[in-house]
Length: 330
Image (cartoon, rainbow, N blue to C red):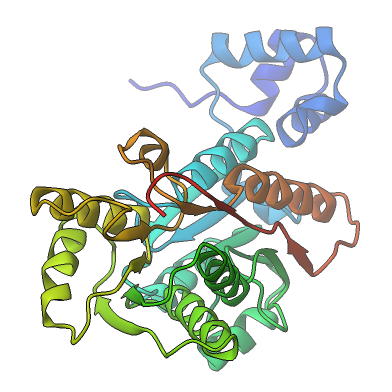
């Protein structure tokens, strides 16, 4: 005959403390003295006690459940941010539900519904929600909502990121300063990439250049798109002197295809990427790219969540900036 599952009282009796002390430890281990905390950990292990997090959520205001929504994780520029963020959240005693929203947030609404149904403490979004109805709905919830990798004019709650448009403008300024005159843009079909392309084009034309040619590619970005993008250059009326790629993966594929065709990079064709992935510095030639401090985004997200848990107010917009990393490819 099966025995009943261990209860909070069993842990308390084993550890020689009150049930209230065990409860405080489970909700916030740092408030319990070190020696007492160790006895409670040993008691939990000895009794095989599994905390009822649902009951805790109903009794209190926090579930310690965080939803992190990202478009994709395969060859993604978000991976370092997500990994750092999940590690930090777990160290703070949270559990993280990681959900994929698909190309340009195709499944975003369904994942938001699931997160809200699970009574999460916070929803962390990668990118900016463009749908006005969804933004309004999230503003009406008591859940902390953090938009990352972008800076909308009016955040839903808190935004931690940078201006994609400004990143495009800075790349235009950089390339003009390097003497390039015929840029060609390879633009993934995402709102983030489009904002960078618009920023680049507006700055380029404003500074006296002819509007760049462009090619749109599907998301998520991958190596093969770069190879196809190079071949598509043959259809242009005039060969560009620099190709501005929407990701380092596209830039890598394009460089390899150009070299296979006997084209010297950057002497005959310069190439830039975006994201500053590790392989951008490992390639030969190394790839000129735009670096985003993903680890800082993660740190700022953790800082906001810790402040909210303590009942403190936070900024609504946190700009982590970006920088162009000049390397051999341009």
